[in-house]
Image 1: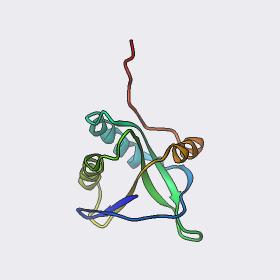
Image 2 (image 1 turned 90 degrees about the horizontal axis):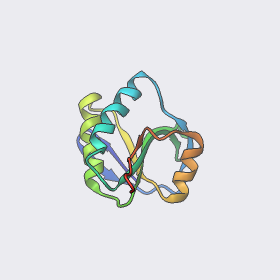
Image 3 (image 1 turned 180 degrees about the vertical axis):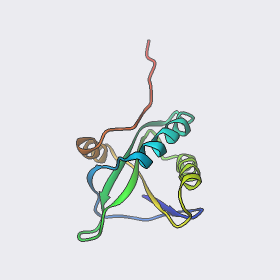
Length: 122
């Protein structure tokens, strides 16, 4: 799990991840549209979700960018961080999470992927 404030990405471990629903509104739709363009340059990234996630019981949920990728490429996180930072105040943070297959199944129950890699099989 990674998160950032200002211009620095930091890793953290979370023992509990509960997907609560999709984070969607006018501002979020604008962010998602910009991220779709950013994510197109990363072939390993398959799907992306913007979800409300609970980590600690009793703590308020956070907005989390959830990524289903064939590899955990830090360049994906950095590209998302740059796009987010260009749109929001410096003290605003965003959690980012590379999903395990089980976590993706959980998030897909409560949230639609806003980004899906197109595959061209012949």
